[in-house]
Length: 464
Ligand SMILES: Nc1ncnc2c1ncn2[C@@H]1O[C@H](COP(=O)(O)OP(=O)(O)OP(=O)(O)O)[C@@H](O)[C@H]1O
Ligand SMILES: [Mg+2]
Picture (cartoon, rainbow, N blue to C red):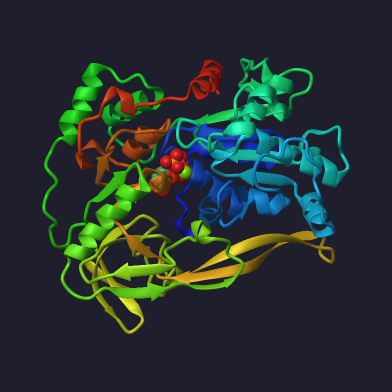
C-alpha cells in the first residue's frame, strides 16, 4: 500500500503506534475484523524510525504487507523445527543483528513451534541467549478468531501435544514456558507467565471501521464467539434469504465467498463458459525465484472474456490514480466487469466508470545488511508481472481474509470446516444489506477453537 491511501489513525490506533514506537515492549495487536489492524501495520511500516523487518507466515500475506516470509527471513526449514540445529549464514546473522523490531502480520497462522524457532534464531544470531528474541522487540498483528495455523498431523501432532498446551502461537514456550500452564493475564493486560516467559502486551482495538450498523456488528460478534442465539440466526438468515439480483449495468457485481477451491473454480469456470466470445489468455512473466505456483500473487495463466467479473488484486498506483494526485480508481478487492481486451490492456468497468488496466509487478523482497551504512536494506529478489485481476464470480473464504466487500453471496456449501470460517466470510461485508446466503446458516457452520476461546477470555477479562 502506498502511504497516500492509509487513513489517518484513530486515537486508539495512534496510542498503539506510540506504544510500539516509543518502547521496546512486545505487543500483540488484536481486535475484531475491520478494527484497522492491517491499517496500523501499514502506518507503522511507513512511519517508524526503528530498523524494522516485516514478515508474515505465507507468501501471499507477506506480499500484502511488502515483507518477507518468516521462513525465508530466518532461513528456517519447512515443517516441524523443534530443537533442531539452526544453520545461520553470515548474511542472515547480520540481518538479525540489525533488527530493532520484528513485525509479524497474520500471526494467527503462525504455530507455536515456528514462534519458538524465531526466538531461538534471534538469540543464537545475536549471541544473547538469555534474552527472549535476543533482545528484539516483537510486534504481532492478527485475530485468532479468524484463520488458524495449518493443523499438525502424525508425528508433528504428537510432538506438539507433548510439548505445548496448543499449537497456537500464544502457547509458544517463549511466552509461556514449558507446556505453558500458567496462562495468567494480569489486570494491566500484560501476559505474564512467570519464570521463563517473555512479557507480552496484548492490545485489542475496539472500534470497528468496516461496518457502521450496531445491530450487524453485534451479530458478527456473536458469530465470532460462537454465541449465536436463535434470534440472531433468524435475523441473519432472513436478511440473507433474498434472491440474488440480476446484474445491473454500472453496478458492481456480486462475489460468492465459498469454503473450498473446487467450488470456487467451478463457479468461475461455469460463468466464464456461459459468456459469448473467445477466451483470451495472459501468461504471467516471472523473473527470479518466486517459488512454486501456490506462492504466486495472481494466476500464472489468466483467462478472461469480455463480460467477465473480475477482482483487483492491487491498489491503484497508476498514472491517473493517487500518484498523480487523483483518488484511487480501484483498491485491492474492488470488483468490476471486463469490457474490452486489446492492445496489452484490459478495460474494466467499476461503478459505471471504465479504466484501462495494465499489468502490475509484484516484488518479492529480501532483507540484507549493509555494513557501510550499518542499516538494513530491502532488496528485490524476484518479480511477478501479470494483470492485477482474477476471475471473481467466486473466491475462497480463505483468500477473502483481510478484504472488504459491500455485497457478497456467502456459500457455505456442505458446511464450514474450519474455526472462524463463517466469521471471516460474514465480516467481509460492510452492511447486512449486502448479504446473500446461498443456504441458511446452520449451528454446525459456527466453529470456535476452544484454545482461542480460553486465551481471548483472559484478554477480555484483563481489559486488554
Ligand atoms: N482510522 C481509520 N479511519 C478510517 N478508516 C479506517 C481506519 N482504520 C481502518 N479503516 C478502514 O477500515 C477497513 C478495515 O481496516 P483493516 O483492513 O485495517 O482492518 P483489520 O483489522 O485488518 O481487518 P481484518 O481482521 O478483516 O483483516 C479498511 O477499509 C480501512 O481502510
Ligand atoms: Mg487485516
